Length: 339
Image 1 (tube, rainbow, N blue to C red):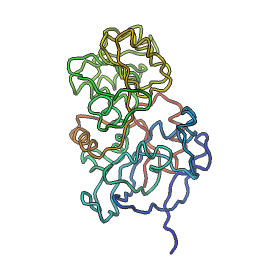
Image 2 (image 1 turned 120 degrees about the horizontal axis):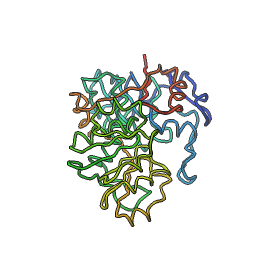
Image 3 (image 1 turned 90 degrees about the horizontal axis):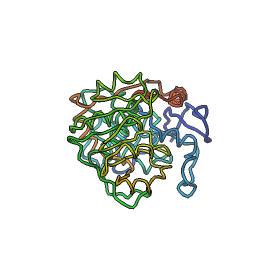
Image 4 (image 1 turned 180 degrees about the vertical axis):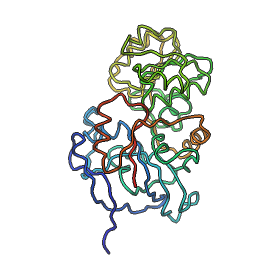
């Protein structure tokens, strides 16, 4: 019997956006505990381009061997077309969304840039009725990241970069600064902080000010005009959605007893300074969770939380979407649409 095929984006080597190919690929074979989803939209996230390039920033011992061809992507929204015999909570025809197998599939096992994806039922939830597939696909990883950093961890897996278990901090009545506030994680972090009663200071370039104030920012700092670490003081929590080696600059903006949450913690070397200042620096690794998608889905459904879409491209033009991502200054999320 011939193998059924679908269209997908595959790559046969690491490199820039030009390695991405739109071509025929084998359909996923449904496994126990899974649903097969006909994908209508895919959300792009930084791990997509990290994998496309070969996760060059990771220490070699953290880089497992990867088999080509690779299919990138984790975030999908679509319709269930087949259900494994042992799955009871979903039916054919259900509109669903998911962050697929993350971080377990971060080295190519999620395979979301495709017309069909097999997804563990535990990582799926019904798509919020109040938003379309493109906006639902744009939510999963970024919103779950903000949620698990700021609201509820949702898992007990240790972070290999720190000895302590990450713990969100109470937000009501606190002053929270969000760096990279207009990006995927950042624009959700602004909304969640405001929802939980915080005074929100958003840091982004000036063209994003109007949007961020609409999303709930009480104060705005244009980092192109002045360094935010020179302006902000007495902050209770900094959520640095940019992270990396420069995240230590926010230590001096924090009160003693405050916290710095770098979304991307690799490169931070300010542990000694943080200890002297009495500041907690903590991060976690976002993990797939259908149960938490159900929680945030209610907020998406009634409009409490908005998904901002920067731009949308057909699946066949994934290369152009990655080129857009490389330019930076993304407002919200980039998505792929699958006809």
